[in-house]
Length: 227
Image 1 (cartoon, one colour):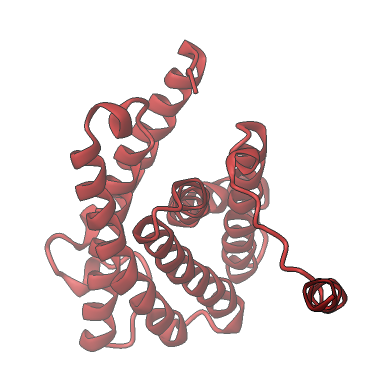
Image 2: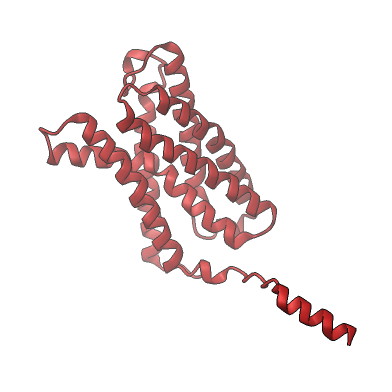
């Protein structure tokens, strides 16, 4: 599928913004100073799990962005495969750590619920993306990777929604703003991913499954063969 200059420019700008925001957010944890953590933690164990989640998630973002660059899959298939493996290898532990960190969150159920749902879906999308690639179902693989990276990017859009809602509702409860930002990032990112999948015609490229013959048709065929 040929890509327009506008489409390529949109990918470049959004990819750069995604990488820049991710690196900025992760920079607070480079020093491994618990006092610099952007979210309150229960102790050194919680902080260590959070740091591991953030850095594996950062690798997932960096590797995932490269997969959407036009022509990489066609011109550098080996690079595409290697970066895809790096992406999945980062998502799997990061999503599991995300579930654990969500349960340890001091913000309560309002923050735990969206982060848990996000992490579970993130893990599932990576597993399905890997399985379809191994089965050489490349159309389905592309769709699952788009959905997966939409969940990967929720860490970025969640921060943007938090800033926007905090600016629009300065007197609102901080916990409510955080929960709303997390849910908006999760739901809207998935909706945008589905819109992208449909608008680019990726579902139309999937091979249709052969219908299994019904019991009645099999019986009819058996009768015909006997006759």
